[in-house]
Amino acid sequence: MSTYMPKAGDITRKWYLLDASGKTLGKVAVEAATLLRGKHKPTFAPHADCGDNVVIINAEKIVLTGNKLQQKKYYRHSGYVGNLKEIGYDKIMKTRPDFAVEKAVKGMLPDTVIGRKALTRLRVYKGAEHKQASQKPETREF
Image 1 (cartoon, helix red, strand yellow):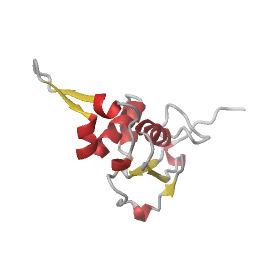
Image 2 (cartoon, helix red, strand yellow; image 1 turned 135 degrees about the horizontal axis):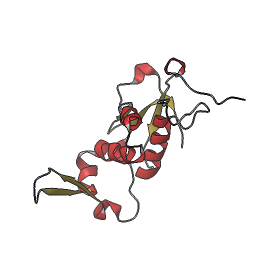
Image 3 (spheres, rainbow, N blue to C red; image 1 turned 180 degrees about the vertical axis):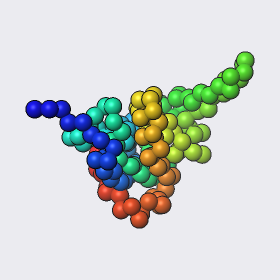
């Protein structure tokens, strides 16, 4: 028996819809990263980009457990001395909850070309409305 090697022409990409309302940030990010990477498929290969497209809705209704909303911080640095910026997740979740979800998913994907390519197939929306209705995404329960 030989090992199956997926080719670029053999890969079919489906669309999945994840409803994040009432779910924790980590659980949503894990499910999205699994679908983007293609690990749910029997034809998964770590060297090939065989993942699917993911649409996440209701990002503003996502839940952070414990005291993470007050204690968790997002840091960024411009590269200049003394220019480290920090912002709390309570402020991020009020203004840009889609950004928080994207950062969580990005942290669960590999830091390679395949991971960066997979992140381009992720769409996150604050509310229940999304622009991918014509792709007929399949609702995924988790």
